[in-house]
Amino acid sequence: MRRLTKAERAELFGMFKGRCSYCGEELGKRWHADHVKAVYRRHKLIREPGQGYKTQLVGADRIENDALDNFMPACAPCNLSKATYTLEQWRDVLAGYVGALDRNAPTYRMAKKHGLIVETQITVEFYFEKLAREAA
Image (tube, rainbow, N blue to C red; front, top):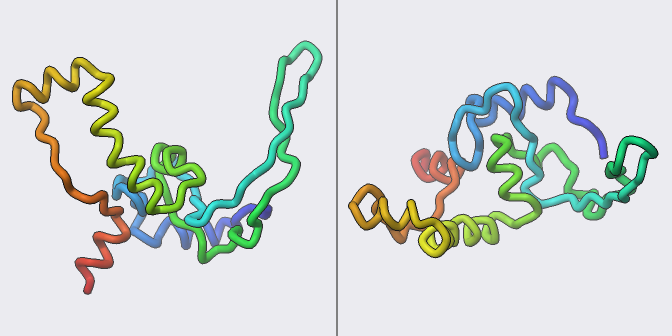
């Protein structure tokens, strides 16, 4: 897989005026170039004497997805959360976070009980989708 050039990264950064294409937050300095359709990297675990273990990239599948028109600018949390999900799969995962919080976080349930959190049934809409809808 190739690295994006500085010009390509600058173009990608400017796509949404320096905002994450998924959540809309400002990207800052340490942003990611996300593959919308995933490239699956294959790694091998290597033991280095006296240094422990590290991973080494040994190949990739779906390399055809490593194309400039398949990239979106993303903040690190969104890119790491999205991982190799499709947009629809990730939308479902994000929607499931509310139920997970309700099941697993007593502080969330207490805040909800006292009206500090109001759950909605809205469909997750990514920032780039919102911009497209508003422009139409």
